[in-house]
Length: 79
Image 1 (cartoon, one colour):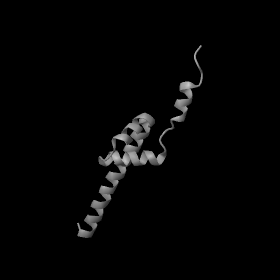
Image 2 (tube, rainbow, N blue to C red):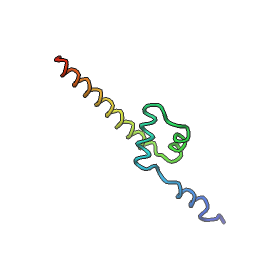
Image 3 (cartoon, rainbow, N blue to C red):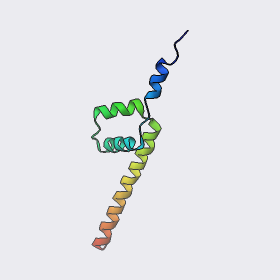
Image 4 (cartoon, rainbow, N blue to C red):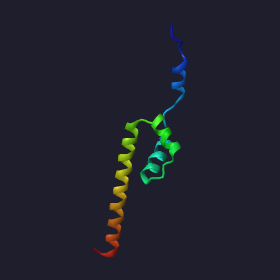
């Protein structure tokens, strides 16, 4: 018979990334300064769907910020 509790207990102790860990990892990766240790942690504990959604959100925020800055500059230059 197989032992119960060995690997199951270990897998339950590994928790998913918290929201702030996910934000920090996504923003670091977005600008290209992600450390190797954090990247390995993300691949072992993170879910791909969370990173996809967070990446899409960061991309939309980036584009929205660029559009806003261009609109602001255009407003102040009189164009």
